[in-house]
Length: 373
Image (tube, rainbow, N blue to C red; front, side, top):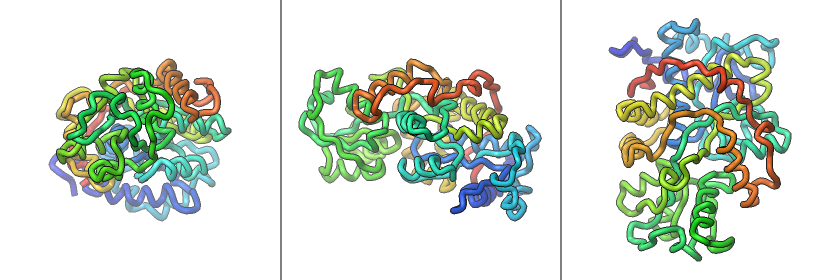
């Protein structure tokens, strides 16, 4: 069966089969499918869009890819074609599917162990893994802007300086949201110890603020927008206003995937960068993406909250130009060193691979709000 726009209704079911074949407990993965890990955060929105566009292209028969329905019915055969028995065969004609993780530690561990070959990772986390000898490379970024510092709607604070001595929740010491707070502290002449930081999963932050467990929180969306929509929180600072070159989540792949199948890595980079350009080309596309990501197969969140992020203001999170830019990474790296997140400076070449960005070929992004239904 197909929808009016010709997209297969089996997409979500096929994706479930893909995930089972791509990330079992034994770490084996199908030769035709690449699972790409990400968190259900708006900063990662380009990933489900890219994966869905790739799947829809396969469904329409373009690009020489196998059909979604055929692969969904071929689970047994797919299981036989594990990465452990590929003998160097290319999966350049394959698909990438979104695999949802609920926290950075689990995602990091999956990439470290090799159970995942690709993921949207925090930039300082990717740097740290490479510095510790884990064979990973950053090949694109996932978004631009997108972090907020939220306070209670009745809090009279006008800037971060007014939060001296207060408790601010952050997702992780590796999160660039944390570095954003520190950057704002520097701007307002604050010193180490003026803020008490509390690490907390982003979904818990709105409630913690509402119940006065913390005085503020810094996070990516949609967890700022959720509290803002509910009326009990407001934005104190946004990266869009304070840090024009802000980057956070980055597409990170293991070196063995690059060595074994550079075609698949190139295809993934092409679709991710194209998805970013598509998202920023008009508001209608951003609304479509919000509806798509609300599906349980992706973020499983209220589409009204995701659309609020897309609209208030329209550049609250941006996705255009997802190329690697050395000075942007160096800025994050130096802030991470100053914060003690990284033990020492790490050379840009140590953790990046620019060849795929340089060979970028635009891909058609064909998705609709009901693509995953």
